Length: 231
Image 1: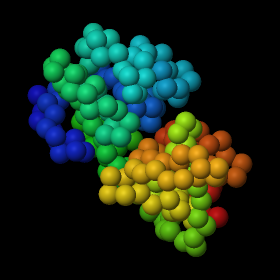
Image 2: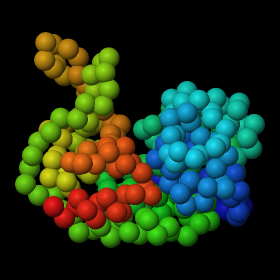
Image 3: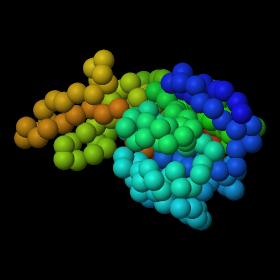
């Protein structure tokens, strides 16, 4: 048994050999699925990539079926400090399930976070991650082109600047024009006085001629950024 620290600095006891993983985050689900698919035994219903993913579904990211997750006997559950609720993660820990929480608000932090995830899974760093890191190391923030990225309705929510996706946008020459408070979430007033709030949550980024969903897919990340990152 290994005693490791996740992205939040919390100690997590992880078996030396990880054989069963449940993911509560779509991006982490695909990251594992394209690297070591045999490890995944459970994922949320929002985990739609890769299309061939055939695992037990444990409901949503915000309302996982905790008893079902426990019944899968995972060696490790992958979660995210923004995407998942603390009450659900605590319930899993109380049931004796190791939970690994990721946290990233910038592109470099995302690479480091994924490197730690694969370390916890006792896997080497996959080639697609090294390739993506190489591409992004050459991309720097450039001329501003402020944007607003709606990511939810009822209430309207828009992408905040101090988020992973906000940093990604800035590196693609289109920073979000919505600042967030120290809590990284606030409300303001939009057109026709409809409620608008900035959000900690990340959103997919669209490039001309590119399926927006593919930006969150590690299997194609390096190739697409190689094509778009040098424009």
